[in-house]
Image 1 (cartoon, rainbow over the protein chains, first blue to last red):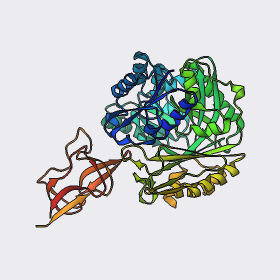
Image 2 (image 1 turned 180 degrees about the horizontal axis):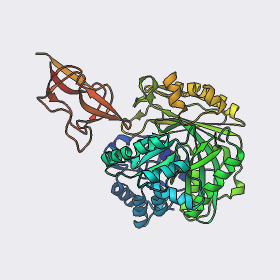
Image 3 (image 1 turned 90 degrees about the vertical axis):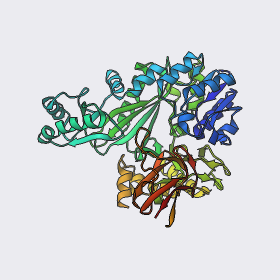
Length: 447
Length: 80
């Protein structure tokens, strides 16, 4: 790898540039018109402007990114997260252009990007999935048989739906007889495809994911991350290890994840996401993300392994620098996502000039941001202002350190979620670790 | 006849249609009610509806679809 182009912006672009610098690899940033003065553009050795502010006309344009790579003489592309990172056709185009793609091959991205195919791959690899139908159900008789076996209540989901749309909760056989035809008709009307499938309702579930890494020969896990604190399916706080997760479940989840990575010959960093149902003490595969994750720093904090640096090594054709036995997790780490949003106004985004922006620091505090004081947070991209990551020898120490850090932060010019995050951390649910994926929205509704 | 300026409280990208393949919310010359949506502002992957604010008739638009707008910019003029 002679020169690396980073096809992203903001904190993750900065994060990748840092790893490349440590390996002595020159970097090329791409930026939109709106990001000319941004931190990632300033930090890279070279910068290529690839289009107007709108991401659809800049960061999401495959040809513009490839042209920038050719023009600058880059021989490798790191996609970061979001934007083009999980587009198999982009990974393919990079390779066909004779460049190194920093990520798993297009085939792995493609399998994991298709929900039904990903679930089939997981089942083949022996990874538990949510009990239910194997693909669409044809009629009421089959639906009743599947639901009986899975156990009520079940969710009847439109195959072409997604993002929480096209879901009906069915609590009994009688209700199934009545609801199934309606669900099919609705799916046909809303998505142009009447196929519905059935899954048992997983109640009070925690979202727990496992970091995996592979180099085509060796496959390892780097432990789990608990990511149940979510608002509108956006993670806000992540921690590792997952509190209250029994160690036998953790071990089973981690080895299932390694098995899946191995089954697809995975190269690079990936994350296997699960729902964990404490009442039944069972876990189920939901999806695999074939890229570096926003919350990867908490794994780095407890393992001491630089995941982005390892991505670059493996993409260069070298083996990863560690084996499973080298992964020794120590202490507890928490990350909060500090967003430029106003919690008092339904989380209305708050872009603008960062008049003051002093990040917390001190022992065991890491901050990753795409901005410094004096920068302008543009209105065109996501609202992530910074990630604050703390480490402690135990969970209580980490929590105290996070509260201290949130209070130390000084921001003016934009409104942030700092005070809101502190309130969440101070809830009895967060303190006890007994929170699930609906906790935050339930708490907000009653607060 | 009084004229009312509809301004955006937030910055972002202005759209006159709910989706690219759908018709414009309103056109010049059309009568609107105070609660009616006349446009959309995309800010940080969220969408905020711009309401007419008054009952009246649309006289003109000061910004076009896909234009980048800042807080306080005039979006449209409504004759009350």
